Each structure stands twice: as C-alpha cells, then as structure tokens.
Length: 269
Image (cartoon, rainbow, N blue to C red; front, side, top):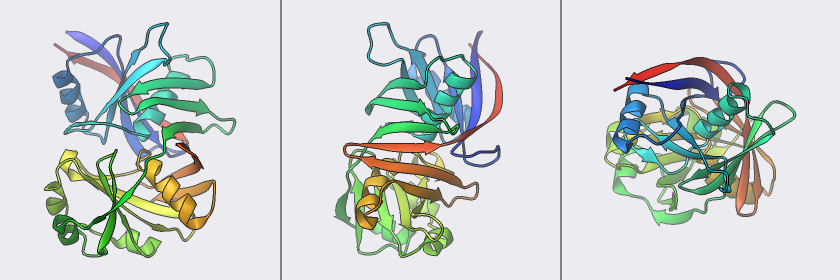
C-alpha cells in the first residue's frame, strides 16, 4: 500500500464551514491519471488539487493539476488558494510567493500582509453567443444573448440584480446535458460590486460554493462595465464566499482568505 497525505481547506472564507472546501494532495511524483480521477471522485469535493515539485531549473515551484469528481479541469482558483495555504502553513514554504505550472500556464499565489492570499491568474475574454436551447430551458431567466468563455468551457449569463441571482433555480438535469460546459450567472451587487453563482453538473458539480477561476472572466467584464477597479465580489451560494479582484491587463488578482479543516492520510494500492 502507498500512503499519501491529504488536507482539506475552506477557501475564500475566514472560518470553517464557509467558502469552498478543496482537497489538497502533495505528491512526490505523478500517479496515473485514472488514479488521480478516482481519488477526486472519492473525495467528492468540487476539486482536488494535486501538486508535484518542479526541478531546480524550472520557472515554477510546483506543477499543479485539478480534478473534479467527473473530470480534470483546466483552471481552478479555490483549490489553488487552498494548495498555497497548505504549503505556507503546513509544509514550511519560505517566502511570500509560490509559482505553479498548470494547463493555463504559470500561476502565482502571494501571501498578503492582511493574512489573505492573492491568486495571479490570466484574464479571460468573453464572446457573445446566441443562447443554446438547453440553457434557455434550464434557466428561463436567461436573455436572448449570453456570453461564452472560450478558454474555460463556460457560459456567462448576466441577470438584472443580485436578488435574481440569489433566487435562480436552474434545472440541473437539463444543465447536465451540456457536458463539461459550466454556467456562470452574475449581476451587479447590492452590498458589493458584483455577485455570481456557478453550476457545472456535467462534471459532478451541481453548484460550486465559491469559484475563483470564473473571476478570471468576471473581473475584466465588471471592471469595464462599472468603470471600477479593484472590485469586491460575493458568490451567493449557500456557503457563500468573498473575493477581492483587480484587473491588470492580461492578468487578474483574486484574493481571499482560507480556513484549515483537516489533515489525514490516504492509502492506495
């Protein structure tokens, strides 16, 4: 049997039982993809992050990959923030910045003086598209025009106000038929700059509690629309989460806190 460490951290929250729980599994070397996927399915959280140290000549400190219960995902914010928290607070990482190599290129996490961690992520563009019939059926509030995030397999639906986002109840069975395509709904905030919720049942995430990666697209959109920067955002899931966002050209800063929940060991053959 092989024994592996595992940590669980609630990201984008100051206290446990809020924010988005992520599993973090530091590895010495990569396991087969099927094993990584099975571990993520067994953990049954929105994402499990796996980390392997990079070599001395690499521009990054760690290679990071993220798996939802049903598939590997190309970009994940909350599990990256959770991974950095584990490295800083449980594994003795020195310094205030960690560099990760990922499917979306180099990512960074910086420890800030207020105790929060800031993700350095790519800014993602959006493109207007005609509404897919499945999306119209699943979310009748959707208007005739929606956006697509072409580099992150998501649709973006803008609603009128925060209450509309809060009350939305999409048909998850219909959304599941979209496969790996997730759906972001967003609106101006009433006690913040903007709000959002995120659904991706096709990869095993009915509703994600707090989704850092979607703010790679939401931050540029709302910064331009509100003519404001930086921005304070809330994700209106049942657990809730808070994010401080800043548009920086082709990059975005996404900051939040994290709360430690547990550490343990996993045994696999």
